[in-house]
Amino acid sequence: MLTLGACASTTYDSSIPSDPPAKTTTTLPSGDADTLLPRLVTVAASLSSEITGAGDKTAVADQIVSLWNASKQEVAKNRPELLGDFEANVTRCTNAARFNRAADADKAFKNFLVLVAAYFGTTSTTTTAT
Image (cartoon, rainbow, N blue to C red; front, side):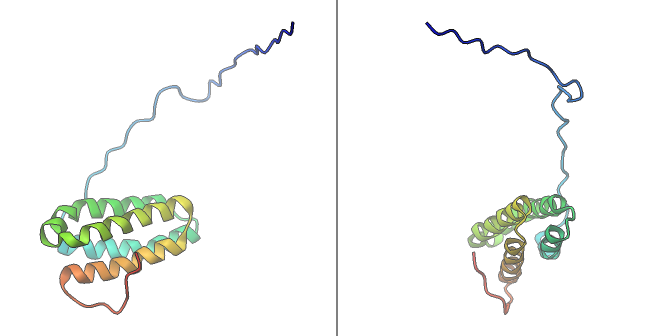
C-alpha cells in the first residue's frame, strides 16, 4: 500500500485585493456618422505608431470601438452592406492592439479609408483587403 501526503499549507497574499475592480463606464462620442467616421479614420491612423512606440494602444483601440459604436446605427440605416467590413476592421484594430500587430493596424486603417469613402459615395485610390 502506497500513501501519499500531498497537503501543503495555503498562504494568502494580502497585497492582492479580493474585491473585483470597479467597472468603468464609457460614454459614446456624440455626433453623426458624417463627423464620427472621419474621426475613426484619424484615430485608426495612429494605432500602428502607438503599438510600435509602446504608447497607449489600448486607449486608441477603445476610442476606435467607441467611435464605431456611436456611428454604427446610422451606417446600418444608410449603408447596411458596409457593416460587416466595418465590424471586421474594428475587430482587427482591437486584436492589433492586444497582440502588438502594427501591420494589422495599418491594414485596418487602409480599409477604413476605403470604407468611409464608400459610405460617403466618394472614390479612394486605396484598395480594401479584409
